[in-house]
Structure formats: C-alpha cells, structure tokens
Length: 288
Length: 291
Image 1 (cartoon, rainbow over the protein chains, first blue to last red):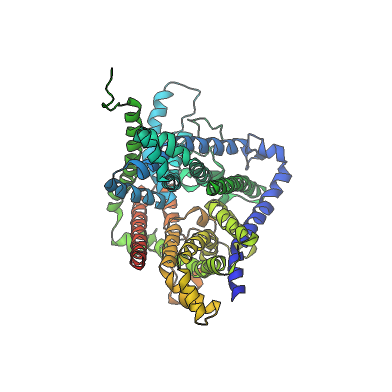
Image 2: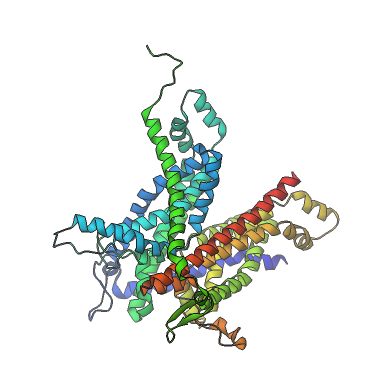
C-alpha cells in the first residue's frame, strides 16, 4: 500500500514539474522567434497588424505598478483589520467581522468584476471627467483604467492579508504585551511598538501572499482595466499580464498565440520568485 | 505640575485607535454592501424560467440550468479524482514518510501549487489536457485542470486533521497486532473523517468560484446533455459553469442576467460557508468532549 500513497504524494511534485515544463515549452519559442529584447522591452503590441509587433514592456510594467498600488491601498486596511480582530475588538464585533472576512475570500472573482463595472467604473469616470475636462490630449477611458483595476484588486487581496496577519498577531506571546503594559504603555502604543514589530515576519509573508494574489488575478480586472496597451498611469486604459491572455486567447493563432503563452511564462516567472521569497520568509517566521 | 494620577491622553492614540476601528468596520461594510447590492439587483431576475431552462435565442428567454448542470458535473468529476489522490498524499506525508528531503520537497510543491494563479492553470490545462491529450474544450479537460488546482487544499486540510488523531490510537491498534495499512484504514481515516469532509467542502467552494482556469479548458457551452444516454458523453463536450455564464452575460452587456447569476453564486458561497462552519463546529465540540 505504501507505494500507492507514495505515488499520491508524488502527484503534487509531478504537477508542478509538468506545469513548469509546459509553460517553458509553450512560452519560450515566441521569445526566440521575436527576439528577447524586442519582446520584453518593446512598447508596441500589435499582434494582428500586417507587420506584427509583440512588445510587452508596458504590459509587464502595468502588472508591477498595478500590484504595487493595490498593495499600498489594501495592506494598511488589511493589517489594521487584523489588529482590530486580534487586539482591540470587543468579542461580539469579532464574531461579525471575522466571518465577513472569510466570506469576502469566498466571493468569486467574476462577481468582483461585475461590481467593478457597475460601481467602481462610473465613480472613477466622474472623477476622470472632472480632472480632464477640456483637456484635448487626454484619451477618456470611461472609467476603465488603472485606478479602477487597482481598487478592485485592493479589495480582493484584503481577506488573504487579514487572515495571515491575524494568525501571526495571535501567535505573539501574551507576556510581551503584558510587559509593555507594565511599563505604562497604552493599548494602542503596545500594538504599534510591540505587537506589530513582533509579528513582523508573519505580516511580511501576508504582504507577499497578497502580491501573489494581485498579480495573478485575471477575470475581475479584465472588465475594468480598459485593455489597451499603455503606460501604467492612473487614468490610462491599461492591460495586465493576466488580462492580456484572457482577452486575446480565444481568437489568437500561430505566433500570436505563442506570444500569449510567453506572457503567461513571464507571469509564471513572477509567481515562482514570489513563491521562493514566501518560502524563505515563512521559514524565517517559523524559526523566530 | 501635572498629577501622576491623571491618565495622560495622547491624541495620536485616539487617531490610531479610530483607524483600527474604521478598517475593521470598512471590511465588514464592504461585504454587507456587496451582498445587499447583488441581492437587490439580482432578485428581479430570479424566476422559474431563469432557474429551470437554458438560454433560448428562439424564444428570447434566458436560463441558467445548463450552467448549473455543468458546474455540478465539474464538481463531481474533479472531486472523484482529487479527493483520493489528495487524501493519499496526506496519508503518505503524515503516516509513511520520514522527515527528510522528500517530504520537504513535496510540501514545497504543494505550497507552490497553491500559489499558482488560476489563469496559469488555465493555460497549462489548455496546452496539456486540451491539445496534447486531445480533449479540446470539454468538461473532463476542465475537471482535470481543476484537480491540480484543488489538490493543495485537500492535501493540507486532510494533513491537519490526520495530525490531530491521537498517537495513542495508533499505538493501541499496533499493540493489538494490526498492521500499518489496517490502522490507517480502520483507525486513522475514520477518526479524521470530519476534517476530510471539511477539505472537500472547501474544494467545492473553490470550484464554484473558479473562472479563469475554466474559460480555456471547459469552454462556454450552455447546452444540457442531449438525452439520458448523453449523460456520460457530456463529459467530453464543452460546458461552461455559472461563473463563465456570468462573464459571458457581462461581456454582452446583459446586466440583469449577470446579476441573477451573481445572486445564485453568492447564495451558493454563503451555503458552502455555513456548511463548513457546521462541520468544523462539530469537530471542535467532539474534541472538547475528549479533553
């Protein structure tokens, strides 16, 4: 019997290896055909033109900038929510907020996309219209732009960051807090000067996990990002690595399809780096 | 001179404390807002035609039965494959394997697998199951892709519950002369059954909400199996799930239909969450009794 169980255990390794091999095998050919520099540092994406161009620099930059902005907005709210849950909230409120966070995690990404289109997009459009009124050089996006996508992403990473941060805050030994109180520190002072620094490595892991979620999210932001390949400026219609694949895969063929797989390979490379960082920070957290 | 006995109040404390409360309440308000908004906008679309028919261009009606049936197909097939493999892997990791390179390698692989975004699973599924294995756009192709995706959930949750089985149970059985496989089959797995059930429910939740991994693998057809005899062949046909239906309706601008599907999805998510709570609650109670 042990052989059967061993094979099952090997299943996870086989899956990771197969995915890695396939992503490289499918994504690499286009990279050599188009040229590594032309593709990774080219700024024009025109796959169906008579003289097709496959530059994905702006797409890569959008994913990086968009993820960073989502983290900047989402992480403070998430970490403070985790503090609220583990440190300051009265019991009855914990009983409401905790399940709410769990449910937020369970809501399908297409539902977030739907809400993004119908709530976030119009609001951002009003702001855009007010800022760029009379500016002929600005291409109006109708609210489908980087900011809308970032707001949707910021909400979507909340549950992940809250959960992991809360776990690490709860793991901080009570005697640290008690010592701080004994020295005359207030409750809030203790949170920011003792508890949060003590839970630092857990919170870093939470942020890294959040980065992974945000950079890999596809369906929710396909509808609100606008989907033209542009520099990632707040009110530009932009295309992320993920949304590029979703929006063009169905009608692509030949070199175009191979190029989409290269975009997938770039995303996969990002994710693998994040995974390795996560693994080392988690190990560090465990040692502490 | 300020008295020592008067508590000094810092304005910064009040602001920070306010921010903490604000964040906690904001997160909850977000969820409440989402649920209310979808319920209000979606309830109007829910009627018998919506729930029990499929989209008909001739009659001009819309229904989600096909999407619901496909979702069910994919849940069942994915679980049929992933549950035994996932439990097997968890049993290997907790019962058989000796701490060492291999175990940490398997755990690293599981960790990595759970970090891979669904769009990558979608690309891999399309290239490997769809093209290399010639499954094309089919329910089976989608299910196999999702199997890889939910494997980490099942392995990890099962592993946690296997670890809670007291060592004395195993030693007791060993003392009575039972061999390893018999101990696992009759003692370890039955004692951690509720943990395994939790794993399966969590996996169902993930499958119901999945979209990016299915778009290029299971396809987007909303048709039902053609007849009773078509139940099994349907596995090889294209089949879109509820989330894919929502995505398509949304891209075509049919807001009312999209909200109807969103409401059905939210109700499913709430139900799955309640079920998880119920099962884990029972586990906690049982463990409380033992202690």
